[in-house]
Length: 378
Image (cartoon, rainbow, N blue to C red):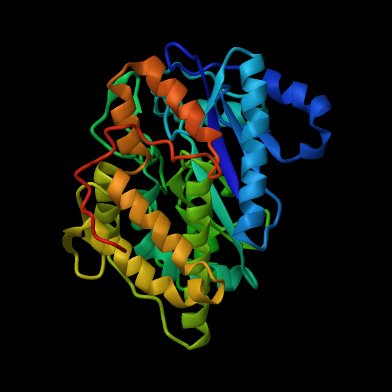
């Protein structure tokens, strides 16, 4: 699993371009994390990756450790580590170190002028790249729901955008973004990706903005739909949902059941609705091509992956956490409640959530926690 984080000024919520300095320090103070802490496109972003995990408990431990390590280092440089899909304060883009980041900045120019978005990437093992592409075809209808559950980026440049995931809106500015097309084979996938590179729209094949893809580095399906979740527990929830969907897809493939072919335009509409409303408004049912309550798509997702979650003894935990989100709201909902007290309060709240642990007395929810989310149990 890969998580991207922001370094923020404690008072203004603006990005702090200290990633390179922090990473250099951690090379000597945290040698065990070498290769797992990385720079990102902006100089105010950091990425932490886990190793291969077999259980959610193991994953949770690694996510917490990475967040705590980076948070301590950020405080030493007068910044706060924040798990937010976009920075709440004024954004001035400064590219991270490296020739590849310079090429990306030069290619996209104004598109990246205020682009400092943080996502969460879940890798799940696949037998081979051909199987990975088949799995992705089965995942396509569910990618908007994964985004809605994780929505955590309502602010940009000090203002409420009106969206639950402004990160996704910003990401769709790039070519080849969003829900991937339905591919006939791995050769078809490689050909379509190659066309985008040959057209000069992507720096290289590692850069596709599709929300699910065969990893270029590992033998995995890489799902990149989610905003970086506010807490490690919510990141674990995203991992459980993705792994459940992958296992369900493998079962379908083994039984010879083809993936449903949904309209690219309807898939784009579903993704927009997820970015706009998160879990607070309507979603788009990609099979029926019509609006439904967001909670209905969450329930459908749970039905889809119930056998996989039962096999791993995770069903009760996942149900409990989804009920909590439907009651108290996504990260975006909670950010908005915190922002009533100003950007500084929101920034500190984000930092608290980033390193919050389930063992503490209560979840990081403000006292006026009720929202207009439809309270229907998944």
